[in-house]
Length: 626
Image 1: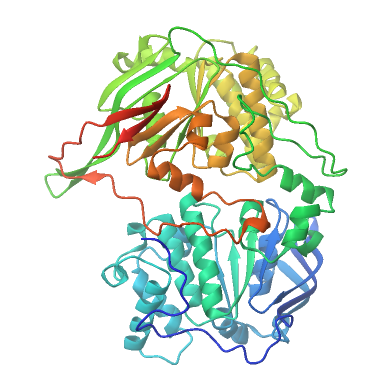
Image 2: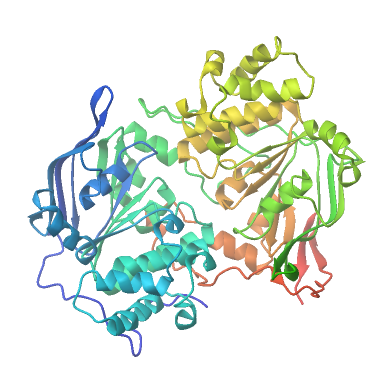
């Protein structure tokens, strides 16, 4: 179903307010000299310093910055949600002229939800898993009084329909775990809108979502803002999203505002070096048209604003007759069992008859939405998840037929980098010990040699060797991912599976890690199976691209062919959903498909069809849909 932009739906009770004669430029929210401090062992630590800004009626203001810049703390301070006793908030926060910081807790609780509401980054942790979504939306209405339970239920259903939950009536009594990430975020928006707030604070509401789901949520927020006449304070680190949605932009660094202007002016001629650094690190779809090989991101000096000149990487692909990795007919399914006898009720067709080749020094990107099977494909190739059938050959050796001992010896040639570097590192081990451990386990170094090798690997990934004695919590996200790369390199692998390795990183840190991966590929001839949902990043780093949908590859080919001449409707849908970091193109209407990815769960006796592929150009093939 294609999203509709409509001010009113038939039979739908309007929630929009009259403007009450307020001028467009009169602020709904006025923040003046806001400072926030937290109590530490060393005393009070100020994390937000004297920031001031306004949000006008029907206006969207973006609060932009990387992790630790203070933008989320600013939002929590506006809502009065900073921890009592361990935080100190100073300054003024006025909502329609009333200072929220001066309100007692009882009055502030009435303001939250009714006049000002917030949606958070991760809806699964914000929704109560033991209550249905209908109950949770109804409770938001009942908590502010004025309606009966019957009226609250009816209004909750209308809200779920309003945020485009498909078949809202039949899904009203379902629990959060039955919904996808995008649909759970829609439920959170319905709860936020329950009492018709004047101001909506959206704290990284699309960061954890796939690009197509992100496009749906952004489109929904814009539509609801138009229908409701509300103002939006949108918090993000993604400048592409800022270009898509914001009227004005505030850039924060180390708890301070470093630039504040109309969004179009910031993108046209940013004044502060840090803003220019953020903009330079944004991957732009279509920027690789003139280049054959992957290309580094430009890195801008945050103090001077001067950018280095990104170089196209040399041709690293080895023209060997035999591919490094040859995957054929790979199939991985999971059984769904229930009942006293644990009978198989259904099967999840996670990976279905997947075939591809990867040469030394080449990057093949596996792209698609969450649930498409790309991560399971990567894990199946490494036998971290056992496939049902198929063939995986590394340098001609059949991986799936190896014994556990043989597989252990073979695994040193194939390593994995995971999405969350903090969860990948043992918090009780120093990073030097984490890097040295695989060397010792695989008898590549003894306990006296391994620490020196670990320090050398840290230096190779751009970290100081003396950092080997620190623990994971002492590093930033980007540094932790570099440590994970160093650990993967310890065994001198030929193949690295990078599973969403940069998706959790801030935009400038993401650029630095990708540049490191490209540099290591040039130096060591590494082959990457690069798993991602970020099409703009994929265009920058890949030689070839395989698009996955419901466990199958629906299109595969050279990067230039996939991005320049996409054939499958799903490939075009992924590309259309990428936000364009250019406010001047905001008026260009995009077709946003409001539907969830179909379930890969099938009946036990289901026999999947044998897919046929049509060759578009040499090396570029697309599935022929039945």
